[in-house]
Image (cartoon, rainbow, N blue to C red; front, side, top):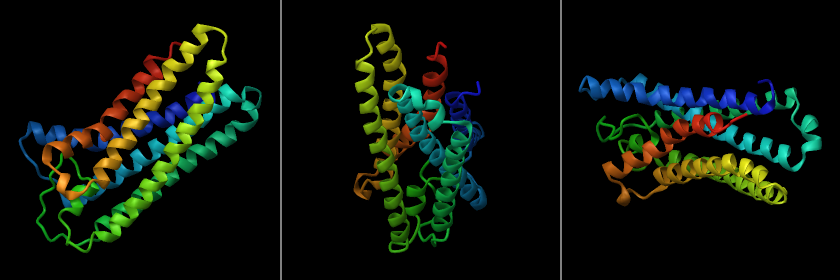
Length: 242
């Protein structure tokens, strides 16, 4: 369990647990007690921790993709490129990057004046819903920060896709069909979950206001905030026979 794969799985499990615990318990409490209230401080804390865990999770998924690339395409260099110190540094970079990203968005979002009431049309506090409550010109600064974050996320996604192309090329050269199936059985679901997370979150944050509707916003939020953390344990643990 001290191999790099399981070390990164531990970090991924912590981000999944943190992101789910940030949104779902409060939503369940509101549903059971038929209330829709959350304090201003609680909303800010929920937004910060959600952004923190989801950002760290995405960076960890990018690192885990690199881990697979090295293990499949450069196996003789695996111990050199992914030693214990290198893994610790990469995991720390993912957590610190997630913290800084969450801090930047939370501080900027909650510095905006709310001119259109205090009713958030979602089951948790997320940036697009809070921006709808701000003044018409005040949220442009936050939109610029979101655009920068989306570019960073898209850059990581391109890295993941290019890396998987190299992995698939190496896997297809494996002579045994069982070996190819074993590699594809985990790589393809991982790529599907990352694609789902990137596409739905990007659409939720960048879609024009004219396309917004309560049902669409709810569906998108569930797809990028609940589904990936719920599927990751299935992909990385239950499907991992070894």
